[in-house]
Length: 218
Image 1: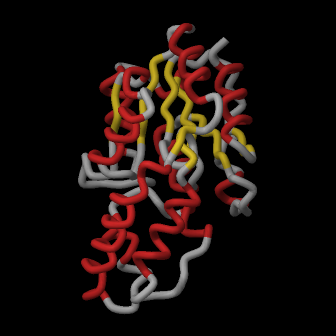
Image 2: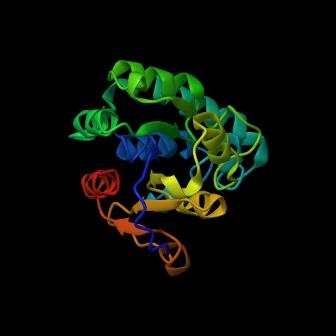
């Protein structure tokens, strides 16, 4: 775990479970999608999210041939229910404070481009971010660090001056691969010790994560 005290100039946020309160809906969506084809998913699924559904569903459905149908059920559910997703309390205020301090902000998410752009626009968050990398923008996915490296390149920013905030183990692993301090929001779930040891900090809620980010950008 890093002990850096250097002031942070850029902050990269995950989206689901970090900026927007979507995890209950995501779990419902996966449950609906997998209901005819595999076991009921648990909160543990969030440790693996970071790429397109077909990559995740391949290990969850009873037969590979059922993956397309499960994805269609997922897409349909999300289309009907995405309007229920809301930002966590205080997100807009924190992002405005960071922008006022001159911090450059970005999003690195496993969510697809279409729904990511819609969520950011729907809640008036899109103008806070200098760049956004989504799960279907590149051939690689979390924890592969390519998406994070692409963000650093676009921002012309160095890893030691950057902080990553996410809620999945793949966020921590991607951050470590880039040499970036990562705040892991665990939402009170158990975190494997090997992952916990690699995070800069582990907190229970987005609110705690935002407080740490503000301190590192003072």
